[in-house]
Length: 564
Image 1 (cartoon, rainbow, N blue to C red):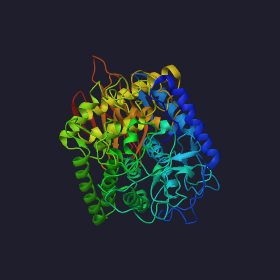
Image 2 (cartoon, one colour):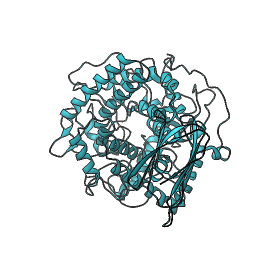
Image 3 (tube, rainbow, N blue to C red):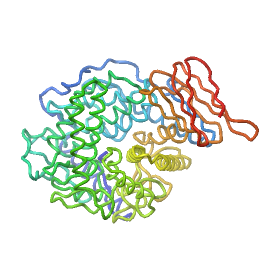
Image 4 (cartoon, one colour):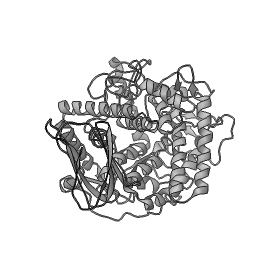
């Protein structure tokens, strides 16, 4: 999320620098206003949901008994932090404002007056566990409802008016440019994009480069589908996703076949200056691979084999280019490219998008996993920092995107590792993040926007009570890695990896239209442990305990007891 604030590279000047950025930001708002109508053309023409159908907004006290209820006797503070996170999330559920043109209730990032694209995508990933009781995946509807006729979607939209955030609107009707530029530490400056070895795409885009980054809608939709198996949802969003993909391909593809970005919503990151004027990012290029893979998968689900094949071809072509141009075989890492095609020198978390997008070969993934286990780079006290610890500009206290640990990037790393079979490393990183979030919760009573990498503390700066995407840790990572429950509605299967010797489990766990209760009693030396399962629908349960795996067929509406 571009937060309209930044940090200097030293602790001494960080507060003064942040103040200067905030002053510039406030001055910009005064001069240009909060939002503007992006034009007279109708928006959202590719999305069938056109009006909001009013219904009561969920209230935490009234909904709590329907939400998944974790059992984790190993440490009751994990459960307390879980419920605190939901309580904070419920404060950020909204109905569409009357004149906004939004079409669904939504969860908000709780940062300012705007909704943010990549924040919202990540927030759906923990809200999925409260489906259908809270606004989760439907929060993305409001972005689709504001899609421009050429497929562009603004990544930041005013919550009250429904209008694109004005600085990101190309009201000058110019070729692609960044309004606020790349080096936020030096203040905002407008920078034109230069296309190399390709023509400037006509007509000019409706939005600026600042607005067009992190295209992860389709990933979020498939994360939701994994739990809901709602095919009708995929049918609803197919056309908006396709149009958005092709808009990005039209305007962001550089002549080398890779993709252009600016700060990529990582405001003050040291990598940004190397991307100026049309440099290509390892994150956005990998995300476009991910986008194409996701569209191919959705296409096959919907019976669109021809279109799926085209996206698979796009994937193969882009993967080849990334590995030819962005992989450094000496440093064993992926790097951004400058406009001139030179590899940027900065090791940042952006490179790990290659794991999520399955860009890396087996040997490249092994090298990236080694970096995640390297105390000199990415194995910090709290994992995973956004900048390698041995890079110039790394801030041990956080420094926003120059070292701080963020829930969304950790989620990206974890899912990416699982793609390559590094399940134990993924679990280790997930539990490290969760543990440190809980430790800070013990001392502060809340959760934070980001965290320090080299101590157990909130990042500096960091916003408190942030749910927001920070809910990923205390909610999704608790359920999936501490308790160990993962569901696949498509396969009608729950896998449960039981690691705790204490009582553990979950009640009111919803997936694929079923509500399930799973409880494993505390172990002792005199008797074997047992799992008690009840569900209102039949499913397959795969239990792993002490390196042994067994599969149980759970019938509907019957109590099943399994001896371990």
